[in-house]
Length: 112
Image 1 (cartoon, one colour):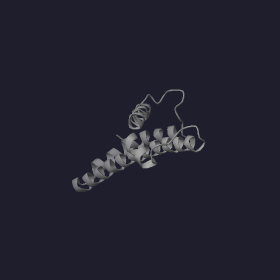
Image 2 (tube, helix red, strand yellow):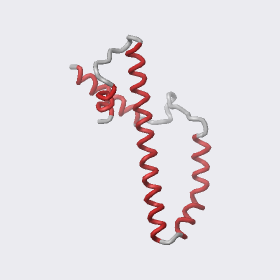
Image 3 (cartoon, one colour):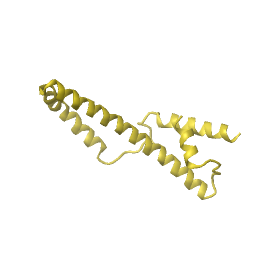
Image 4 (cartoon, helix red, strand yellow):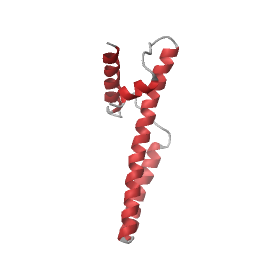
């Protein structure tokens, strides 16, 4: 029964993570929109610079940029899941939520 509960908690957290980020409960990080706008403004200039590079350098730079983007995404997912684990541990510590799994087991359930 316990595993079934944690599976449902993990499913819920994954669905919530993928929900529409424009909902009322979405977090707004200071500086996010400005940085996003600045990146968009720089895009054209940077793409022109990349096109002007020799093929080998261009390919290396594009591969590096793709890895940065992947790492960015993974760091965001990690922070998101860590926030949930921290909330569950807080509720458990307050006696409001029973914790039958270790934090590591909980993370495995959430990351499925």
